Amino acid sequence: KGLINDPGMDGSFDVERGLRTARALLLDVIDLGLPVGCEFLEPTSPQYIADTVAWGAIGARTTESQVHRQLVSGLSMPVGFKNGTDGNVQVAIDGVKAAASEHVFFGVDDFGRGSVVHTSGNDDCHIILRGGTPGPNYDAASVLDAAERLTKAGLSPKVMVDCSHANSGKDHERQAEVAVEIAEMFAAARREGEGPVLSGVMLESFLVPGAQSLDGELVYGQSVTDKCMGWDASAAVLEALARAGRD
Figure (spheres, rainbow, N blue to C red):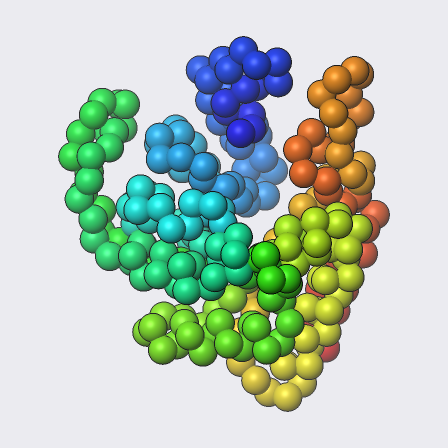
């Protein structure tokens, strides 16, 4: 579950240390002038870090969760809802609509006390296509279908694509191929004068490609969770995306 839950990566689950470490890290990053994006796994920890986060995500396994939709309705940042693991895009669209509404629910206040929380709704949400059990959904037809469904729902037809997970078959090296295809799709739409339905991409990226086990000596800059693209591949992908934005 990450740095906050188990900062020692040893099963000690020192959450207090994790919260302090995570917040310090986030502050260090934004001091560099670099915006930070985070996936929100549960509704409590955002109270401690939300002021340092520029963009948030709700994962495929929690996008239908009423608790997470209520959480997003009170966050002061854009948030993306992923389609379900079964490929269902409608659950993400429903999440965006629900988060845009006002909610009243039991939660915690700024001092960590149990309280009744009133939210005003979050109009800055969008969907993220990440593929599903049937296969990828980053192709032009899938993206346009999602945009049309958003429009029919009265929402902004902006779609982000996750180049990893089911869109890459969980092959971290294939992320680059997916991203290049998306860049070509974006450039073609611009040349034809069409509105930019694609609003962004997600990449699982780190310094060293692949992933490692927590057993034994750790390699600096390599993921201990999902397999990631390395630095060189990431730089090449960003250059391809930048060219697509200029063409």
